Length: 212
Ligand code: BEZ
Image (cartoon, rainbow, N blue to C red; front, side, top):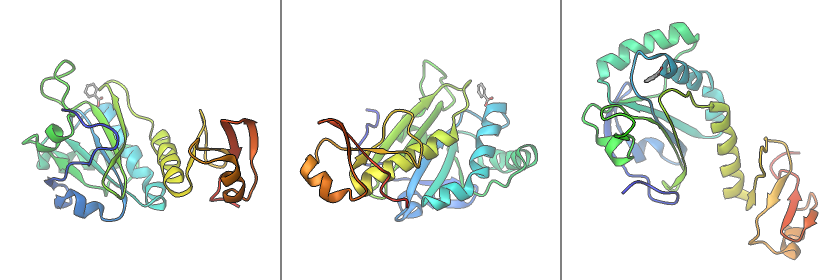
C-alpha cells in the first residue's frame, strides 16, 4: 500500500553518490526531502537537481537534508553530476541514491506502472524530524517541480509544528498566518501576543510568530 501523510517514513540503506547511507541515521534530527526523478542525462531532471543544489543554503537554513533518487546506477549518477554542475552553474553535493535494485522506489511507491514500467515518476516526500511523512507530491516526468514551492511548504510545516498555526492560500513567508481551529480564541489571545485579527470565529489571523 502506498504511503500516506502521517505514516512512518520507511528506513533503508542505499548506495549514494556520497557513499552508503542509512536513511534515518542520515537525517538525524533534520527534516528531509526525498525526491525521485525519472532518469539521469535527461533535460528536466538536470534542471531540477541543479536547482536543488543552487538552493543549498535555503535548505540548510531550514535544517533540511535532501536526497535524490532514481533507478540509474552509481557510475551514471557520478558522470551526470558533472553535466549538472556545468550546465546549471552549481555544485551538487547532496546524495543521489542509485536505486538500481528498486528498494527505495518500492518502499516509497515511486514507480507508477501506468506512467512508466521502468522509471520513477517525480515523487517528493517531506519528512519531519519525527520521521513521519508530512507532505507527498507527485509530478509527471514532463513537468519540473517548483523548488521555491517546496521551500514554502517547509516553512509552513515548520511553523505548524512550532506554533500551532496554519498558512492560507498562496501564503508566503512574512505574511499573516492562521490560528488553527483547535485553539480557542481565548487561548489564542494569550498565545499570540502580536495580536489577532478575527474575520469569522473560525478565521483568525495573526502575524507570523517567528519574525520581528
Ligand atoms: C526529463 O527529465 O527531461 C524527462 C525525463 C523523462 C521523461 C520526460 C522528460
